[in-house]
Length: 453
Ligand code: TRP
Image (cartoon, rainbow, N blue to C red; front, side, top):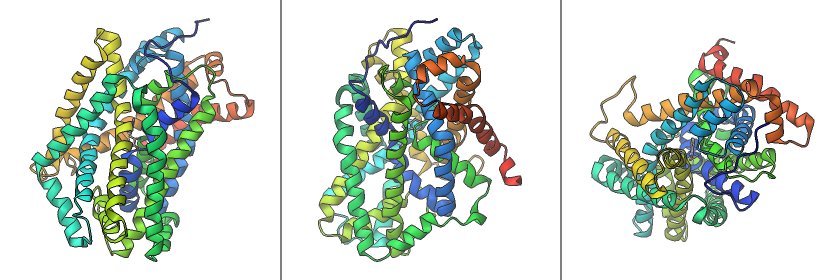
């Protein structure tokens, strides 16, 4: 019987600290920037419904599995997977899963940082008052001018990467706990302000209808894949981020309850963001399916018109940057911790190396909005390709493999011991999901079988 491992990198001060950190990782641009535009591109209600089903059927069970693996291994995902596969007499190749996660994290962060850079630049636009009484055309121009300038984008991308590297270098729990504890609720409050504005404009029900009336004729293979990818992306699953946060979780915390709380916080923010944005879209006759620029083309209109808009707008974008910040650290943490374990580097050195590589890859995304706009592979720009490859392929694949490892390769006694669920009925339900439903479901969506049914 292997003894319990302890983490050389420290432990969360409490269960709440873990919930906050994991929620900080989950809630980010994925909820506020990506969820609304994906819903807009995929016809609204049908996408939202499938996204929610994917969270329940794949997301929550995999989150529990990831936290469980992390807590059992107590190291970087690469070494955790290596060690657990030895302990469980499983094939060595499971170690590759950790590698895949490190790669996915770097690729995601490379474009995540560019978008977080857009948000940084909107902090400046809001404080300067340039959003006041802005028209649709002007708001559109503001955004297209921003992304047309590669130098401006590089500036903001560099600034955001530096911010991320500084926090990662100091160690994840310093400062992060505080940031999440106060800033996340503040962000939720500001979204409520926006919803209040949407209601006052009289188009709120149009937004509600768009998000909650599923038009099943709109469901096709692409919508399914997008909704599944979004569920993984938004919960930070499939690449080891939650695994590494789990590795700092104390032995006594309930994995099931904690995961549930995180998932609930994540869904709530995404739905609220949608409810804030779509009414503004319809009130101004904007295009719901306009893609990644959606929130940057719509929210300035609301802030430009509402009383106190300069303050609310500035606060909103500042908090959006914080939400992105608490997510970005978790994307790079697995790579950094691995370098520390493997090469004995200090956290500072490891952060600089990982951050620089990610920054460089990020230039591809920067240019995909301007000088490389016309270069496409499979009809996708560099940014679209990176996003598709990571969210829709790598994360679900990572999640599928985690489910197979936990459900089929590990001894049940180890799993039961670590996950320590008090209700045996819930444990059986989780086990059934992770062994059968999750892997089969992900494969079905990958291989288009559902479309045929
Ligand atoms: N979930 C974050 C968001 O919604 C992004 C993120 C952070 C992420 N860590 C991750 C996505 C790990 C996938 C995997 O913005």
